[in-house]
Image 1: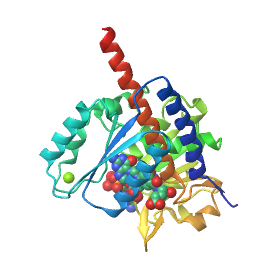
Image 2: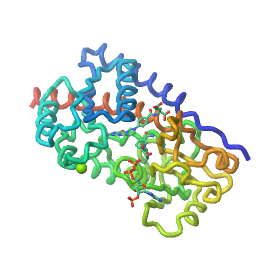
Image 3: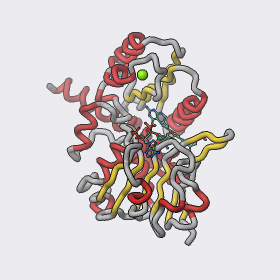
Image 4: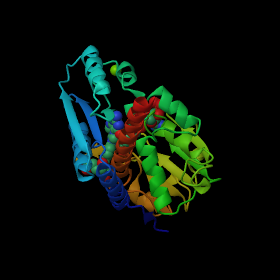
Amino acid sequence: MTATVLDGKSTASDLRETIAEEVHQWLEQGHARPTLAAVLVGDDPASQVYVRNKERACEKAGMHSRLIRKPADTTTAQLLELLQELNGDPAVHGILVQLPLPASINTQQVLDAVSPLKDVDAFAPENVGLLVQGRPRYLPCTPHGVIQLLVKYGLEFAGKHVVIVGRSDIVGKPLANMMVQRDLGFGPQFANATVTLCHSQSENLAAITRTADVLVAAVGRPCLITADMVKLGSIVIDVGINRVNDKLVGDVDYTPVSELAAAITPVPGGIGPLTIAMLLRNTLTACQLQAQGQQAKQQG
Ligand SMILES: NC(=O)C1=CN([C@@H]2O[C@H](COP(=O)(O)OP(=O)(O)OC[C@H]3O[C@@H](n4cnc5c(N)ncnc54)[C@H](OP(=O)(O)O)[C@@H]3O)[C@@H](O)[C@H]2O)C=CC1
Ligand SMILES: Nc1nc(=O)c2c([nH]1)NC[C@@H]1CN(c3ccc(C(=O)N[C@@H](CCC(=O)O)C(=O)O)cc3)C=[N+]21
Ligand SMILES: [Mg+2]
């Protein structure tokens, strides 16, 4: 079997076009231009690339993006002050604090300072809680991208065994929460999964992954998922982004696994571009939520 390659790049491009049209209509109605503020601390080269991609995508979709660069020796207190400013700035709708932050920074305290209304990563406890309860305000970008790609290719996963490797707050945990819901608005066939969430302490990882109908790798280790860990005919989603000899690779040993799987995402050109498209979606949503809030205040 040779897997269908799930084209994240073209799927993201289609989604971005739809979002750009919605932005256009939104502006025609006389509303503010949706604006994302991205805070980048330090000069990690990989982070720079992501942030630049996000900036370019925003402009192409008719949105503004403000990149706020801070030196690596910025203090937690200085970041808290910056976030207070961004929270209070009515021209800023979405705020993204690029992770990881330097080790000297209290990451939790900084993330907690982002207004939940502007929290386009959906990290805030209020937004996580709403998602877990099946009534999300923002869908987390990368998990949302994974589901959008499965929807695009008609790869239904209701009742299937989805195995996710990696339990981060940005990918694994929210994806598990989304896939197990009854319906998040994509239809019940793109929900209702039986989910297993694995991590570094999971025993018999290979035995578990071999039972996956849909296997998602979100670890950050090249070639962690080898062919012996994959069931014939399964769907393999590679979220990992690793730099090896100046090339981007995922967490999946791509060539041998693609001979077993029914469908597989490449790296690059898989989930990464979808993450950016869903960030644009959330920035538009943020702008709309804040316009509603303004209107309610004026009427109330
Ligand atoms: N494509 C995209 O848009 C995005 C890609 N990424 C990429 O995804 C990858 C994961 O990032 P992120 O989600 O932030 O994850 P983290 O780096 O925060 O966590 C990694 C997870 O993998 C688990 N893990 C580590 N080693 C093993 C192992 N040997 N077996 C099983 N599980 C293991 C860890 O377990 P434990 O919890 O026990 O430590 C942890 O849960 C990275 O490559 C990152 O660059 C991230 C975000 C977006
Ligand atoms: N607060 C926060 N939110 C994030 O969403 C976040 C973060 N911090 N920190 C880092 C990770 C990683 N991430 C990626 C986004 C896009 C690509 C992407 O566009 N990748 C392209 C190519 C990139 C390239 O060519 O360099 C691809 O895979 O094809 C990758 C990775 C978001 N992250
Ligand atoms: Mg820290």
